[in-house]
Image (cartoon, rainbow, N blue to C red):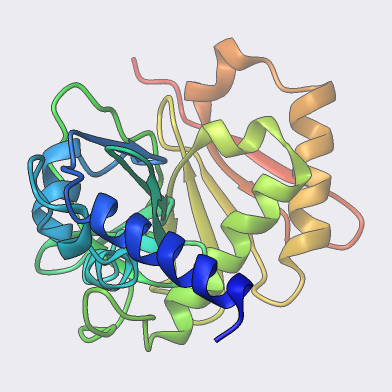
Length: 238
């Protein structure tokens, strides 16, 4: 054995013996918004005070993926006593109202509704779906739901004020895609195939002509005509 190889082996042996005595004193979690710190710790099964050699980062990352809210996860040591756990959570794009209230992200993954104290979910509701849309934690099997997600993503892509106005997306009608707005529930009607150009026209109308104080007076806005936008106000009572 060469002198260099001997030295390397001695250094490796020394580091191994040193690391075996290190205890985990700090666990730092990064990227969690939906899951609490305690929920993350429960998932990974790691506790402060454990020996470093018993903590395996690859296993921790794999355990984290058991939660439907975790898209990716990683764990790394920071000697002498810190473990960093980083997570990328799935971001819900809408509520889904079935037998129970669910969430869905922009990839179509169904998520359970978490009860987070002090957290407000300002998201639209997707209605009019099939009875069976898939399993929680997996991508939906519903083409209707995927279409609704596609529509909502387009609205987000436009960076339109329309996003904050959407209360619900209704797919119960096979021919007409219907969007309900806040402040009175005005209905927006558009075609499934031409929704992009039609919602673009609606966005121009909102940005340039809509009087927000009169939004509650609108019964519906029909975008299904090539040459015009049809707006009908509610009938005045009394």
